[in-house]
Amino acid sequence: MEAGLGTVSRIGPGQLDAVLVVAEPSAKGIDVARRAAQIAASRAPVIVVANRLRDEADLAAIRAATDGHELSAVPEEPVILRADREGLAPIDLDPEAPGVKALLGLADRLADMLDSNEAGRRG
Image 1 (tube, one colour):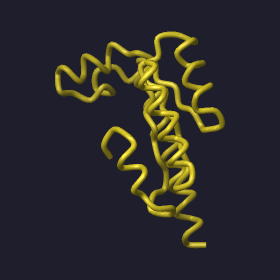
Image 2 (cartoon, one colour):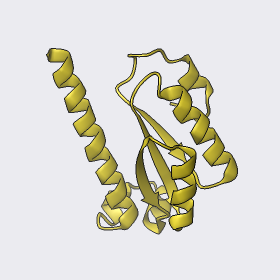
Image 3 (cartoon, one colour):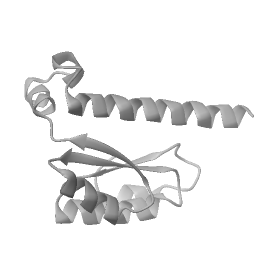
């Protein structure tokens, strides 16, 4: 989906398995993430991805603004920036990099959530 609030506000309840709200640690990024998480919460489970974290203060600011939502922390990661510049997958450059590990953990969490949702539908 695209960035911003428009798309999430047009989605109806039950149309999504989950909503990832990516929050950058800037005043504007945190405010948009807070508003998006509030809107999305009535439509699907929300996971806030606190992205490009430089320190605990960045994480604390995002956590405070998106209180109550599941949070996945992704540190500022040079490997991810390098992969983007080179058109590669970060996991191919360094699967042990902290940012890559954080993204793999998020992928596992989403897979578990989807498996759980699918099992509930089969019932």
